[in-house]
Length: 459
Ligand code: PMP
Image (cartoon, rainbow, N blue to C red):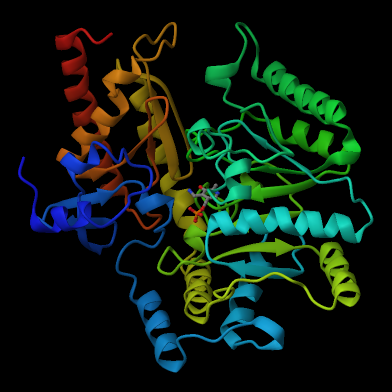
């Protein structure tokens, strides 16, 4: 295969995240040139459904004029001004007001930043700061979950529970603990009911807290549905049991809504879908439909008051990015949240979810699929060599990647996750007809790979 000039330029200049940097030098990049609705076009003019909404983020698709206008107008008015040292701009409060109004907890204030990783990094710093302000100087440890994904900065990568984000980066840092992943299909003991499984997980969490000393455990962070860790949907009752433990030991609860926020699961936040009662949320991605890098954490009144006390003592709140509440990002976020409300995005997701969920569930009948799961407009299939024993394929066969590559040949971009899991997370503006088109491509891809698996004896 000969590479285009654009591909060669890219290989010689750009480092690509989550890429095998060795094989990439010969395979080169797929270059995406433009987008329209839920579709993107590569530089050869081929059209694809963006079945993962980019990186779980382009909720309003690829040519939302209102967002383009909001960004353009703000750029013209003033492209940059900051919020340090008492300065501000009106877009910051507009975006914050809208976020506060829909947040799934009593949010008092909003602290903006640029990405989901920064949001979770801020969460760690805020909890440490808060507990110092409260005189709880030992209460600093964080608990997250194996397979949880919370970002890649030093602190947020430490929260992330995926070996690929730790190995050879000297992570996690100390005081970052990982408890069980609530993936019933993979981790239930033989014969264990969902109820017994979630009870066991809550018990393990409590034992971890006691072992570590509850006085030292500050916070617990969880995605409502684990995204990058495999689209893991928790069994009913899981968060209820986990939250009872957190409450008992005065542990601050952060919902990482970076993927599930803003309608994805059929409610404005995943917290609502799964009965989570967080003290704070992290949001990013669909906060601006990914049209501009902006993210945020919400802060309750108690924490805010403690931050005021610390400011009195220390002279200032010593944290902030150059791009905290960037005016263009804030303008786009405010407009995005306005669009979700005026177009009733949650209602749209609820109307489509039964069809989407049914399509994903139906994939469980395919010989390659061990487990299929979906909620709202997010789902995944887990590919196995043996449906009965749940035995995985040899990782060297890269079956998940093969399905993704086949889907791409049929005009659908999706993403393989570790463990031969293939994720689906289309822009929220998808229609019923487009859902049909999407799953027709998935079926073709699965059939092609099944044919190869049989022919080459890969089971
Ligand atoms: N939290 C979750 C749940 C995520 O899915 C991601 C990104 N995939 C992050 C945090 C990190 O966000 P970012 O890539 O914007 O730093």
